Structures are given as structure tokens and as C-alpha cells.
Length: 99
Image (cartoon, rainbow, N blue to C red; front, side, top):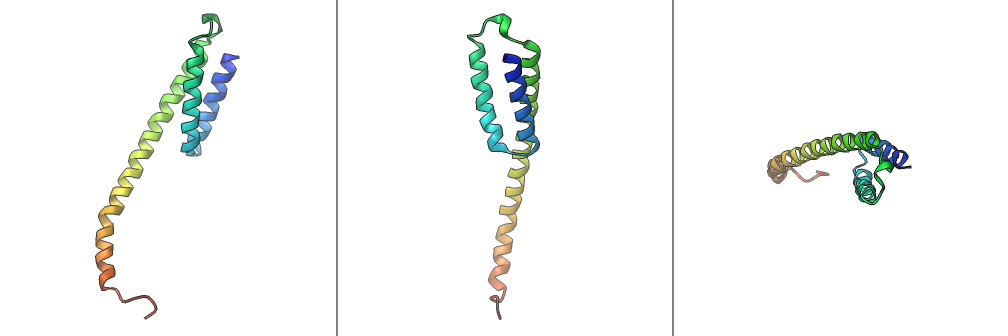
């Protein structure tokens, strides 16, 4: 059962990341945290370490990808803010639309 749940979380996490559904990634991150908390009370023989390693590796890769995406968006936002002042200055000298 633990292996199946770990692999289901892994697949869902990868799918959400591929589709850039960051809200779903965030939700799955909480689900993974809950899953890992439940493992603390599970008997050692019930824990499938290979499935856990797969989930851990995917989780790490998705977190890296989401961090890269965040950095890209932050850079775009900074460029937008930097160019916005210049565009506003041009708007001051542009004739109103419809003239």
C-alpha cells in the first residue's frame, strides 16, 4: 500500500510540474508531507525504501524546476518594472487615442 501511494504521489507531482500547475504542486507538496508524517508510525517492514527514494528524487527535481520558474518570472517582472517608467514617459507625449 505504501509503495502504491508513493508512486501515485510521484506521478501526480510529475504531471503537475509538466503542466506547470503550481497550485497543484503546492497541494501535492502538502500531501507528500502528510504521507511522510504517516510513515513515522508505520512498521519498518511496511516502508518501501525504493519507492520512497523515487518520490524523494522527483520531489527534489520538481522543487528545483519550480525555483527556476520563480526566478524566471521574477526577472521578467523586474524587466517590466524597469521598462514601465520609460513607457509612461512616452505616454505623456503621445496624442490621446481617437485623434
